[in-house]
Length: 451
Image 1 (tube, rainbow, N blue to C red):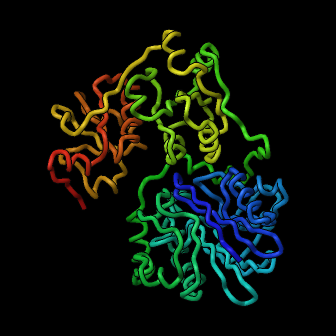
Image 2 (cartoon, rainbow, N blue to C red; image 1 turned 180 degrees about the horizontal axis):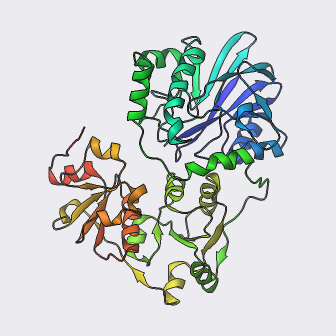
Image 3 (cartoon, one colour; image 1 turned 30 degrees about the vertical axis):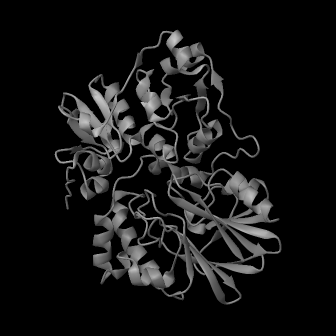
């Protein structure tokens, strides 16, 4: 038995390919693109015979239907109301997988239908796949269903973790789906796998003396999350479109065709690196640099049904761009400009620049810090205004008139924020290179921290 993690660093999630004997494999919480799972299976001479879903995911489109199209059986919570062929499981149900057995454990909380899966060799536990119930140093958030359900689900999570997970052996490996960087409430840090005993000893939430204390700590630590989370559960329940071997490619659009799409409401996204965007871009373009976190910010800031038109540099990975769009359910990928920026300049589109400035060029500018509030409170430039990037589009009026320098941790989110402000007609916006530590090193200034 071998467990192979496949990590999506951008979303902060792990899925797993498990060799279960007889040349067969089990996938757990696979992402939409089946290629990495098929490649790992083929490299080991395995056939993916089963794919298991711990819950209806809010942060990515499930790849189980893609794997089913190639012959896998889908295992999923019976309580999820899934509207496509699958084998529904409830608490205590067991199913043979190769030479091993998979036992479902009801762990409601992160979602109402949530299951963990205990992998057994006979009666001997080998591993437990916990999805969003128990993660490294925390548990996943319970506020993705409805405000009135948040506390009830937090209490259900307290009970289910203690009754069904902490009853397992201390040395049992724990393989969560959500990890560092996930907006499903994973904490900072790089570790993605743990054990029952380690979580019992070190997890701050499990140290809560009682249910009320657990709920208070959990709910008090919840931050914001991308708005696309509110629709993907239903996409995964109904069953996403299956592409099979016909995975979309990014088409090239003539200027006139792209102009027509933009006039009809298409979204213009400049996915080039921020220094290239700063040098010159089409007025009104939204800067979201192509990087691992691209999908999260696309899903936070852009409506899902709008046609998407992209500006890219020649060397950027088009297939990766499409993959990131599709993994969060953004299917309407119209294409990219044929000829790039030069073609648009020749066609008479208005071009503009957004300065990238260093810490020694901030004099006379108000500093707008668009990081998450938890990042801001951990250390920020004195006097900076904090408006999270995810809410900036609806709160641009909170930024006072006059020259502004937008900042984040490295610059990419800052440029996205600047592009949103420029859409309101502002021309006095710059972006700070780097983040608070860079400012502190360059100026000798001390960062402020708030409780």
